[in-house]
Image 1 (cartoon, helix red, strand yellow):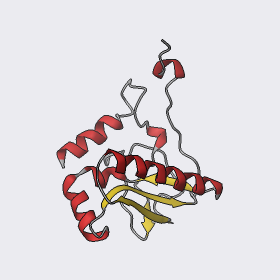
Image 2 (image 1 turned 180 degrees about the vertical axis):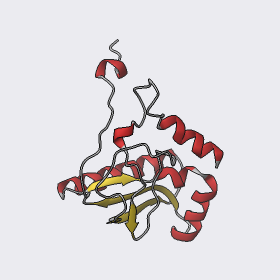
Image 3 (image 1 turned 30 degrees about the horizontal axis):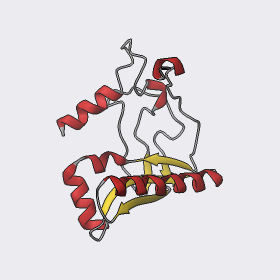
Length: 154
């Protein structure tokens, strides 16, 4: 999966870079969290030890509830309907102070998406994979561009 590794490298630059966009070092843990049951997560540090030291490092956290949103078809109307369903799920989760962690990378690899469809979807099309739960530990940072960098008034 060299293309996948290259994409992660583009999204999470080295802390020594002058780039200010992407997933920065203070937005991910040094070690990929271990969960029970096991739920793989992205390693933005790519084994370099970048990221923030977390109280969770070396421990095990609960994975939360895993949701797989599926649709009967796989066209624009199905994607829109799935997006509307996702909106309702996220609003209900927010009402209950639950956090969402998106795990769409498995659905972005055609072979993995086909495997998930055959194994877990009964012929339906997998559209979104996410976890809901109560986050443990401290909050990690996030980078947001200034509004004037992303919105153009015409």
